[in-house]
Amino acid sequence: SSKSTSKRKNWIKLIYSSDLSPEEILWGKSKHSEVEIGEDDFLQVKRKHDVDDLEGLDASKDPLDISSLKKWEDEEMLDSIRHLFITGGEGPNVEP
Amino acid sequence: MAQPSSILHFSGHQYLRSRLVLSILSGKPVRIDKIRSEDKNPGLKDYEISLLRLLEKLTNGIEIEISVTGTAILLRPGVIMGGVLQHECPLSRSIGYFLEPVIMLAPFSKKPVNLTLKGITTDKHDLSADILRTVTLPHLQPFGISEGLELRIKRRGASPGGGGELQFLCPIIKQVKTLNFIDAGKIKRIRGVAHAVRVNPQFSTRMMEASRSLLNRYIPDIYIYSDVYKGDESGKSPGYAMTLLAETTTSAIHCSEAISQPGVAPEDIGIAAAQALLSEIEKGGCIDRRHQTMVLLMMVLGSEDVGRCLMSEPTSKTIQFLRDIKAFFGTSFKIVSADQSNLDCTQLLYSCYGTGYVNSNRTLA
Image 1 (cartoon, rainbow over the protein chains, first blue to last red):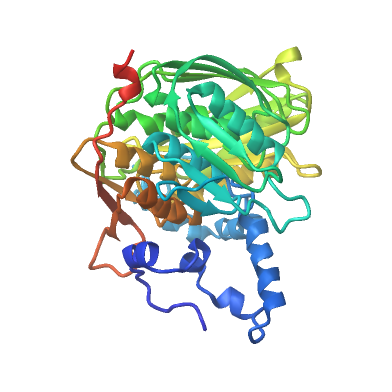
Image 2: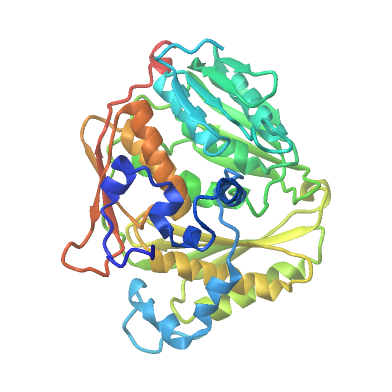
């Protein structure tokens, strides 16, 4: 099944009354369906280990995902968050 | 291990720290089994055993049973004592791993905590000494935990050799204030710490200049502190890192950090930290994402009133924590979009009714 297209999640329902894992709630089951070939038990066990490796450390900092930071090389992207600053919306501003 | 029904039961090694914290605060015993039982090195890791020993030092009357194979533990909580303590952290995890659960427990001690921890002060997995000092501790302020709250970086210790030392001072409180933090405000300044140990001190400056080159377009009020530690105070291994934080007009803080890697120039570390900060700013909300769980915990412990907080979407860790909070305290959060009319709004309003938690350890004193 593909990732849910509905933009708004019902967080209360997903968290408190579903059996989905936290990862499934956030990213859907689509990632798994690529690996899923029928009901093969062996594959399922392997998948469990994959999730383990990602989350296994009980760590509070995600490793920096350099590829996801590439978007900040784009000027339009950089401008898109200007409004979040007190200086925002005032055009090309304060350069040293 | 006998298992009466009053004992809460979980499986797996994930979320171990928060479950131990919730057990101690709620007074409910917890049994955790299947700890890496399928792994080729089954059972608890050395750092998890070390954490259990640290919790034993911090408390009195706690009972921890570990199964012969190390794949199951039973914890019966005791009184959080606090006081002057020391702990040597193994080099398999940085000090942040150990300090995070302590920070959640310390305000509810009998005596103020004065804990010295030795080991690695910055690594890529755990909250670094700089994040803990400049981001974690300020997140406790709205709950009434601030006076006398301090983290001192006595020595820095990069991975893998460590040699760092932190001193954590925490006041005790009677009750947690109800949180009402729903205005994220606008970013008014950016602060940061660039540190370099056992490498060319110029690396700090190079990281700082690179970060500034990206952040200056937004705001002039940027101050990055170059933290230099020399000799014994600089630990046993070379390393450097850039920690950045954006503060808003309502005192919300978002942070990022990038750490030296072999073959990566200091400039690239500075840029990565700045770009990561922009990602956090974009996600928005009143709470830094890495601190969602700590804030939600304090909201549950708050006085018997409705606490409210605006945050970005929950992390996977937060989702499990919300489920575990319900298991230990019976409290569920209401989580709704902050702007019902805007389908693109990713900001969420988290609210719950505080349990009116009272630090009974303190009143016994």
